[in-house]
Structures are given as structure tokens and as C-alpha cells.
Length: 143
Image 1 (cartoon, rainbow, N blue to C red):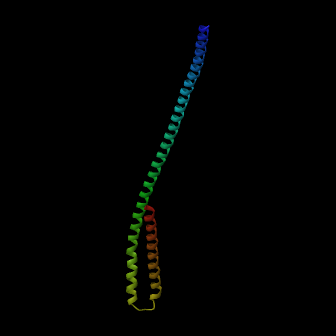
Image 2: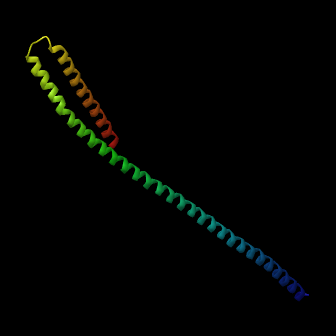
Image 3: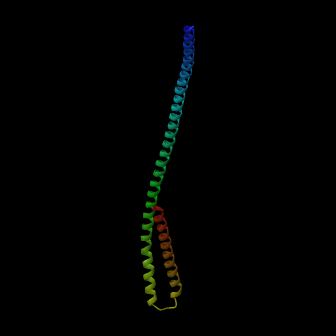
């Protein structure tokens, strides 16, 4: 009888172990499957992040190229503006010299010519002022 009891205990133990083996092997399979699924998700996330970073890197380079081109254009415009400013100095100085010479003479016919000289001087000074303001704006954009 004692043997029967021992045999039944051994059989019970074997059944429990085989059930636990089934459960543990299922858990192992589930754990491996979950790990693989997690790895696939992580790899997909990394891949998406890499694509996003590459896109923004390309956008950044394109914006940098546009900025460099804009600065180059501003420098060209500034050079043209400075050249135009220098070219207005000559006619302005001539008009101012004429005005000084005419001021020394006293005649009644001077009014029309003086008015024209005043208009010419005012025109050149206004143009130089506009160019100076425009140059200041360009300098502020380059900062």
C-alpha cells in the first residue's frame, strides 16, 4: 500500500511538473514573442525617427542655402546702393557750388534759377537720405 501511495504521489508530481512545464514553456514562448514584438516596435520607431531627422536635416540645409543666397543678394544690393550714393555726391556738390556762386551775385533774375537749384539740391539730398535709410535697414537684416 505504501508503494501505491508512493506511486500515486510520484504520478501526481509528474502531472504537476508536466503542467508546470507546459505553463513555463508557454510563458517562455510568450516572453520570446513579446520580446520580438517589442524589438520590432523599437526598430520601427528608430526607423521613423531616423527618417524624420533626415527630413529635417535636409530642410535645415535648404534653409541655410537660402539664407546664404539672401545674404549674398543683400551684399550685392548694398554695393550697388553705395555706388549710387557716391554717384549722387558729384551732382549734389556741383549744385551746392552753383548755389554758393549765385549767392554772391545779386540780380533780380536769380529767383527762378535759385528755385531750380534749391529743388535739385533738395532732390539729391532726399535721394541720399532714402539710400542711407535703406542701407541701415539692410545692415539690420544682416545681423
